[in-house]
Image 1: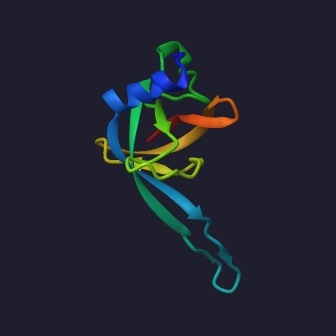
Image 2: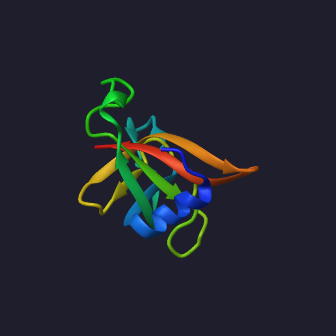
Length: 122
């Protein structure tokens, strides 16, 4: 799917769904005294994302598996607050299921990131 950033913003605004983006802002740490990992800090954002399926010929069973899909996401939440860049294992919930980020690509306009193109899956 090839679009310019402004067309993608219109697509997200018109056809996207509101979801919760759960971003791990602080990674967990390992405590050698107890042998456990802390879970870290998660910050949640209300965002609007547009999801669509991979074409069947793109599903290779390795890097793209059955059930994976793409999600187009602006760089701001629904109130205009800038989002942190999504990372692998961040989650999105509220569109009927919870999915994890598997890969992040960025679409630029000049030096600025305009849209995140995410590969997400259960």
